[in-house]
Figure 1 (spheres, one colour):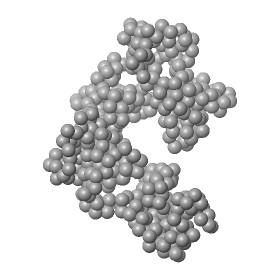
Figure 2 (cartoon, rainbow, N blue to C red):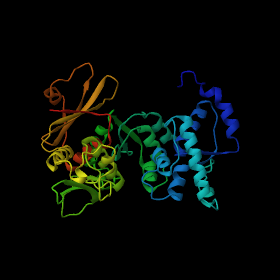
Figure 3 (tube, rainbow, N blue to C red):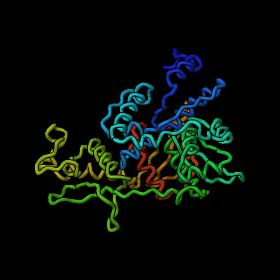
Figure 4 (cartoon, rainbow, N blue to C red):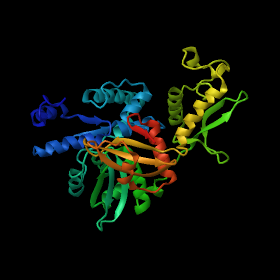
Length: 394
């Protein structure tokens, strides 16, 4: 895409002309605006524009959304988003979102209050130098104070972008990190799953002062099973209660429903018996011949229940042995994590030139890690939403 595109210095003058006396609007402005400032700084020019962030405005004008990322937010609002993560597609979606926000702010009071003046104090030289040395890759990062003590640990698909957000943030934690961070070290993992597992492990080990309660995740919704009067196993998503143990858990009801739909498609389950389709008769999938008729007692409950039990076994790792093969830190390697007897035992990397045909080989290069409930939830959650990893059962 960039092979035949002009260099920045070739369009820099035109950008100055079309942005003169305007307000720079973007979704997560602090990141995009800093990129422009950095490019102009390399040309010896101090680029300044007042800015307005549609992410911050959305949180104030459209509260209680599940996510405020551009892709998920526009989807929830019915705004078409074409060519995702391409300049034109993201820019057009941001324009449409901004128009919606303008309409919602009838008096334009919130819009005006959130315009940020470019004459404010810029990022300190110390923090700018830290950012320059960070990679745009997935991994975990460690923020250190003047005594090299770790004060915060996090993970990100883009380490540089995430640290930039910390340094540009206005909340209390961000301000403390900006004040006390002297250096940032990092560990590129290649795999988001390995980053999640390492982050959890390292937080428990180092107990950084600014990691909230060791990052204990809250999963208020669970997936439950029960037998109906016709002996069919039913599934449902509901709030977790202390009297019964859920099969698996979710951060919100929408995540639970999305995953349940995935199970229905993968295991040929009945929408009605999974609580997705309310009906006194058959479910919708039966009408399009994608359900075998458990909803109206046409399929034998023994056959239907076998598929349900297979799905539940997959979710619980019940005495299962498998490896998850994922991306490595470079193009020549893959990462892996091992689960044995239903328990996570460790992770590692192997070169793509080395054909893995024996699970014992993976065990010899394994980095052992502690098994705990958090790791179990991390792996379960990752498998629920990931479509690109390879599952190797043994």
